[in-house]
Image (tube, rainbow over all chains, first blue to last red):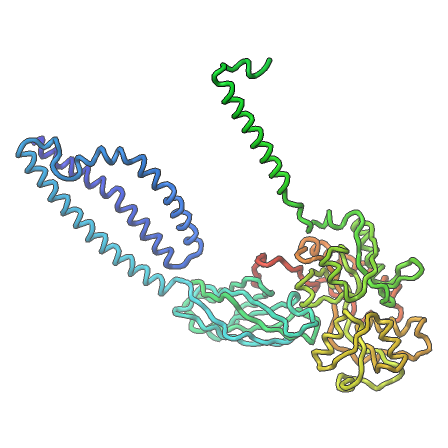
Length: 243
Length: 299
């Protein structure tokens, strides 16, 4: 009776000891992997900071836990000094078999969890991650001149906010054409004109486009300069669709 | 009582050595901190525009900045004096050639340049501007009526421009190679001597030259319909001075609202103020150092 209780106690201890660290670690690792795969900048920073802390702390933990781990090793593997009778040896062999079975089950469960999470990551990546956006070659504009730009978005579905940074380069040498320049940007989403966004050189722009959008176009007008001889080249750099 | 006397003999020497070490290290650290103490940010308008402020200015811009018998006069001079009173510094005018306006700022020979200094993208690569406080366009000055109404009339003709003005670049962009002279006066002299057909630079400067007493009787004219480009005069500042720029921009707004017209009327009687007063709501934003850009605001 007492040996059966001991066995179940040892098993419980083993399971708790293994699962207590294994599952949370696996979960944290997978969440970190998901965030990292999504390319979220803040998540990337966070993971890097945590990795740095872990890298610093781990050697200390290992060093300080070693005596504790060492004291338990006798109960981990094969027959110990406590197993003196043949009956105990049979019980210990039974424990060993159960431990192997649990390890195998855990490995399989981990594999399954990994597959599920990888699929979740794939779905998230396809539907929610940021998409790269290209705006084509630089656009030449004179004061009060306009141009329509159709962004080439690297994927679907289209939703969220279109972000970019206008970079203006003066093609005329004598004018004051870049710093006072104001770009009036009107998004046309699925053929419907949206609200006007006012941008300047080297200023980050974010334009909400809504959800489940089929097409996005930008109408850009060059304003704000008093010199009619100005001629500029506008490049919309670092284009992304933040979903 | 000596400190050593309260310590047991066996530990006196190590403790003394340790104390000396601590003192030496402390002194070294103090010295190193003192030696590498960061200089205060020069872009602090309260400090930069205090005491005596050297202002670079050209002495040969009729109606705008002239120096005669120890006295500076003109619109730019009046504007600089207004800033002096408004901000509370002592202006020290430094006479500089037009083509040294940027280099004098870069080399820190002057703190500001207020001298028909057109704001251009090229100049912004080396310096900052606050403004504009005056708008103008390019024109030409000829002797007598030369029937020049557009650029085609100038092609193949000799045109003089003062070195350092934006006119030379603008003319070259239009395929006209100008002759350059170090001053406006030399260019006007060449027109009077018949060596060149015209002088090209800012219209207000040319109108000032045509009205100057020294050229009276030479029938110098500035054709009203010949104008090109748009010049915006700003206060020149050293590069990466966004705070001082913002501070001066606010002062310029006040100047435009309160003092611009009277100062124009006093100093530029020969010219028309039409289209020359900037809109206070349309002044240029101050350049921010790279990487300090803000976000746009949806309306």
